[in-house]
Image (cartoon, rainbow, N blue to C red; front, side, top):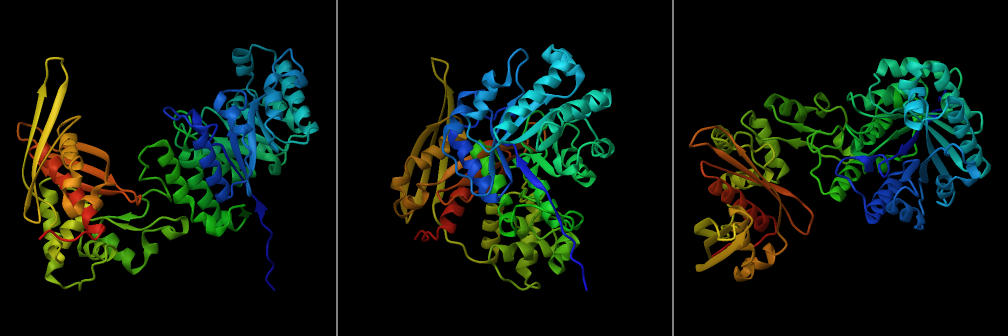
Length: 537
């Protein structure tokens, strides 16, 4: 008879809305915070740290909203009471009590160096601030957590005092004592060694870990802490956070759920179906922050399951486990077969299948396409990320693709007027169904002027106007591939539409305008093709 071992519960604490908000360039609005809270609640993390009520108007207003989490506990963050005030009369603690949350997380100093330099108080006064703050929230029946700031540095410098800070909270009823690597300089072996000592005094079921990524070890330190005995894990979506960021929950959560060394011992609150929402959750944050997602993030990045080498692709097609540590669909991601000058026939066949072109392996068109890709990449093209341009190229070789808008000629001028402003103008001669159309426009630079020349006259493009009205250019990048007076320029353009699907096109030329125009025309053609627009007569 098989004996089923009971698993220990691991608690996930998300601090994106507070710690993540300290990232340079990040400034969450109320609406942003509500969207992220909803996504995290749907995902099923145990705690969502909403911010610091009283510290700024946004966080204060956020906690005044009626937020009904179904799966998570909304948590308010603050700091220990100030010296010279009682806990009952401390404005900061009062703001936390008025936040109407079930859980409270308080940060306090645990390094005697900081007590002296940053707070300017005695070690005994700091211990009293921790104790009295803890008593207040425990008395008010709040689930109380103490974030021991600079714990690991403090422990290395003066373990006796640092442990007394932890006990000041734990002995007075704190549910969680969170060990913070605030400077992010601690290494995994140090985490294991120190937690093995701490756990002799405070049970692991009451310990948490809060790791920063300044040595690139935030995830490793968190995993080491869990194996050493801690049972609460703090981190952020995509590792967002000050300086080099925090532990990335998008890496930790699937590791706990999918990797046997953890899944066999621990259970988390997040259900199997919700694990598939991780990639969506990751990209939602980037969408809210209006920034490009990091393609190389583990598990959820667009390149996390990309395969480029021909031998790799061939092996993956036979058995994905050869080069994939998990099935990408388990975290809501997808496999991506990259086409490049390193590609073999396996890459081409796999990519063609992905875009819906079924063709036999020995079809001569496969070799023709492979040779064309390699020839083009030799002169500067790169189809690694230009999915739309590759599909257009493939369909033009493999099968017929409609002709849409014919570009007869175009003219671009850049001049500086008497007031010192740079003005870019463009004129494009187009043809649709035999009708010649002249489009003119101005813009912030020649490429923007060309784009505007077509976009501002979209109503004149007859049957194509309705297809192009929602087309938007998201990003434009230029790379100079060599030096000299005849430098090769590669331009990549990212586009999107109201359906929310982004696509990438590319153009290469010795002339930056020509390279840009090639990428722009590919973007227009791809938009019309994917929307099943009729061919031009």
